[in-house]
Image 1 (tube, rainbow, N blue to C red):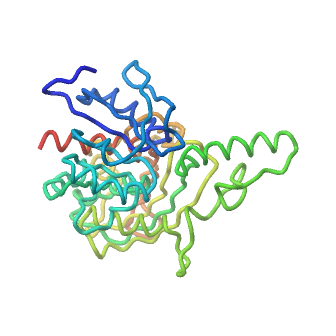
Image 2 (cartoon, rainbow, N blue to C red):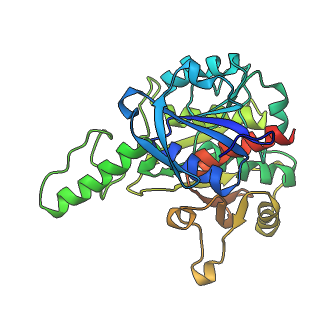
Image 3 (cartoon, rainbow, N blue to C red):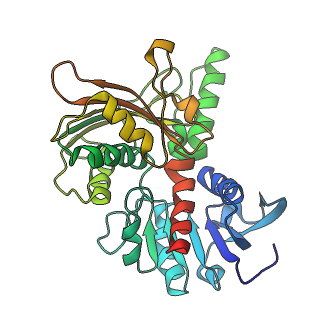
Length: 338
């Protein structure tokens, strides 16, 4: 990776994690103009290697000096690291693109889904926030319907979120629990508050005093910010399911001008990054397994509610790709284009 005038110096904080690994893959797949890549992580990962563009790269300590000369710094690590180091990366001249929740609701930091609100990038001051992995496909589907119907009313959504939303430890715990049950042993729960194998948990992250989980309020408030609809009425429940990769959403959407399912289907199919998968007669519909490994947001089960003019949709999306890594790389691509 010889440094050239057209190439960019890219750093990844959290390069050894689940999202970091996918970031490396997506940068290569999308041929992002990387002339130098710096793999960074916390002390416990220093000395290991990651693979990029056919080479093994040593993992170095994530610290301010590692950002000198960098053009883009992707944060795929803990919120504590991004809170400390993202401003440092910006101070040293890089654009920090953060996947944690640290900066999402900061009024001075744009929260961006490139297919929905790329113009928000014009106001960045060195830090850009990438939305939560459930928010991105949710906002994309809503924006497609809003553009067709001229607005949005109340939205009711239940998310079915894979264990990889908790990173590698979540995947490992699911695998370990399945293996333990097969051996006739009691499964151990450390990452999740209860057994996730062969089970579902009506909780993602932690409960607040009002009974909502932190994941649920992220979905609501982030969507309002991205769509610039501060009063959007969102009723939400987030559920953890025993799926390795791929988040899904069951959505009931109200619009000020009722949309026939056919019009909604056409509007969704025309929206960049969305693929309609919807043929009930052949049992064709979105699933998390179908979305895994791909960047498209899959939308199907498009039908009118039996008791109103509202529409039902079912959405699936790879939470590590479009829900995280791909969206972050698209933000960098949009910044280069602008």
